[in-house]
Image (cartoon, helix red, strand yellow):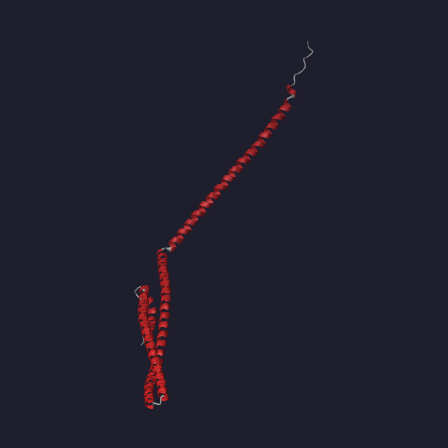
Length: 234
């Protein structure tokens, strides 16, 4: 099993189990991501070595190709000079470099495919690490939320709701009684004040009537109190 497949398998097999584990999920995820990043470093080094080897292979291929072309030019020069034996020797050297170039080309093609595969795996692992970090943050938030909810549930569980409700009902009754008492007092005060004014108004009518009767009596009694003229018996 390759390194990328191993990391992906570990990630998939652990993410679901971590949440229900007895250990701290956040710490376990952090360790998992740390291990993945360590593997990523090794994979990057492997990719770097593969690319370096590919470049060396390319250089060797280019050198063999250039040398084959050079020996072909020398063979043409020997032919122009009428030296067929030297031309054959040059062509023999050319053949050796052509065969070497062909071998290097086949290996170069295979190595290029391997490097491209390593690059894709590297990109995939980087994406998995980014995904793992995102999931870790989401799980962290969910874990904090669950802890907060657990605390709230514990608080709510410790409260006697029946007793609290009965207390509220009792307090509400007291408030209603107090409000009723204030209303009754205000009503009594208003009735007493009205009664006093009614008495004042009633007393005023009686006084007026009493004064009127006195005046009437004075008028009636006035003729009897007039002085009589002196008699003529003198």
